[in-house]
Image (tube, rainbow, N blue to C red; front, side):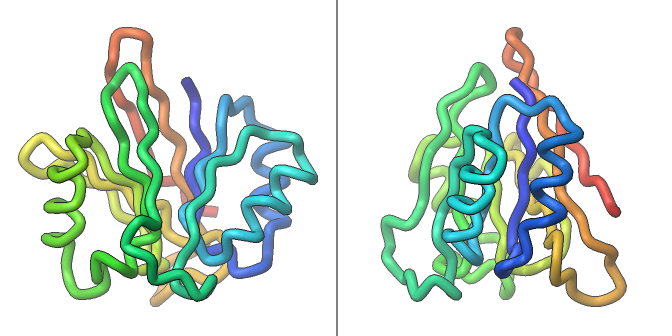
Length: 157
C-alpha cells in the first residue's frame, strides 16, 4: 500500500492534486487544516482521501481522529492540536498508546518530522503550502508492505 501523507494545505490544494496525478498512490492521508481541502482533493482527483479536521476547522472535539488498520498495524491519524504537539510529542505518544497504534501521523506544526521512538513511528509530513521556518514545502510518502513493514520518507519540494 502506497500512501501520500499531507497536512496543513490551508485552502491551497494545487500541489497535492499535482502530486496525486503524478504518483501512484493507493490512498491520500490529509491531516487537517483544512478538512474541506481533503474533500476538494477527493473531488478533483477521485482519489481515496482520508481526512481529519484541525484547529482551523473549529474542531476541538476529543474524538477528532481516525485509525487506519494496515498490515503494519494500527495507525493513528490526528491533526495534533488536541495533543499540543507544538509543545512536545508526549501527549501524542500517550494517545497512540491508548489507541493501541504502532504509528501516528500528525500535522499542525507545519514542520516535517519522522522518527521512531520506543517502537512507535511518528510522522509529520510538514506543510505543502505554509511551511514554518526555513523549511521548503513538504509531504511524506509511506509504503506498507504485505509483510507488514512500514517504509516512509519526507519529500521536500
